Length: 610
Image (cartoon, rainbow, N blue to C red; front, side, top):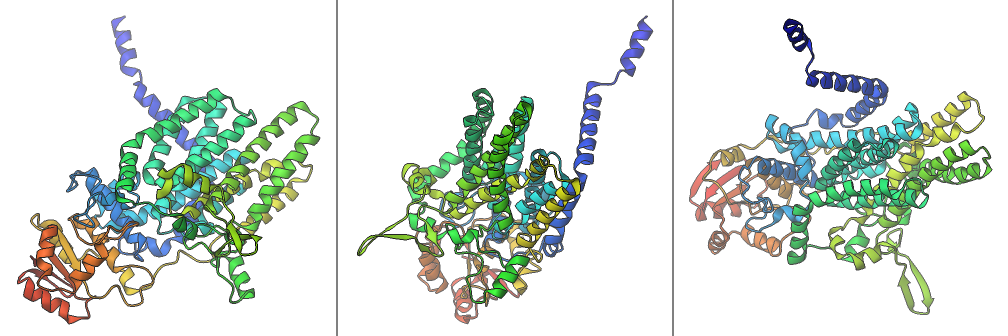
């Protein structure tokens, strides 16, 4: 008897093995159901980014791309407890404090890319890979949500994903890594809908994790996503599609994710108050969308090229200085047809069972339609713009008023949101809602008595129009300037990193930037390599510039004997002169006289100890 019991014990599979097999079976089944869309979106992403993929650790166009590479790298060092005594104090704009809060810290992106930092410490490596991955996740998560909304229609789901991944809005966000983090939103909504379907708490756990990652990736996208989710739930509640209990569970998960971010969020709020790092209505108006932005095509699409060829000399793309809001006429028309058509079909339906199904469909269509409208209205900012100007209504002779928009009330009542400057980026909510509505097309066509091939012909035509209107006609725009390629870590910064005694540096150059550089490169290059060596530098680049920085730097560039005690008072101990961008020989001559202790020199840089 004992032997039989022992035999059963030895041959019994441990629970972990069974759980592992169940997980593997689930993943295998998931891949079988979604492999076509996954592969297509992955291939499309790699093709679009191929110029970057082939230079993944050596390419950057400068500007925000280099700054965001520094942000991730600084996160990596802080997560490793490497030269980061206080997270709020970045190693740029030294000796100013709280420099991590000058822009978004993207802490969750830093956490997820930490393994890439272990592979290659050039900050461009992790940044470029995460940029490509963020594009892919945008398309893939929308594809997964569209599968749920479309009744598993592969064709429409793939093109809904492509639209969300490659629409003109994305072309303005290629270097804005924080804006790309909106890719979490479709996954969050999918998890909410799965919870409504099954009431399983694991979806709430997943929602909490996803939203926590999103909230720690971007404060902008946190606000936009909270608005989108709130509007979505509100419509479902008003229509009694869900009850308060279900909505309450979701709100608890959302609230828990928001609470988890409080330690960092409160520091941001405090910094904004003490340093006046907020933006005025004028800033928001300047970077808001114009009504025209929603109808002017992007010149990087097939339709855009034709349009601007036929309209020579017209304003190209957008009146918003920060991005593109155009989402394609086919998506606009589809949204209105689905909304109005759904109402008509629902009212004409007599069968009780069909009426219930169609009512549910109409409620979800309405919810996503309202999300799109709200995103559109928010993106217009506090005051309506037609083209590049305010819209004025003449009240009487000599008296004119600007037309206020809903965001004006938010500005007045919620001053904590004054950190939002580029309010036009809220147009991503309009794009999100429209892509979700596009996914409902197969469900609506299924209500008709049309033949199957007619339905597929309509879906095929809509997908072709998506390609014509929204898909980029070329691969990712890249700079062909010499300073953008072969950005290997300079030897001087390898020395700075390896020598623990070297810290508190200032980089001096007489030229403001590379000749013909369309965006800042020289300043951001200093910040980029600060992400590698992780030593304090006086130099900086961010959304907020500390007071007196520009005047102090201009004073130091005109190097004079009295600048040395000023630098020492700030705590600076080492000086790097960029010879390549110092065509005025006086800077290097003065540096050699004032700083006789030369530590290192090569063809481009000279490092002096003060």
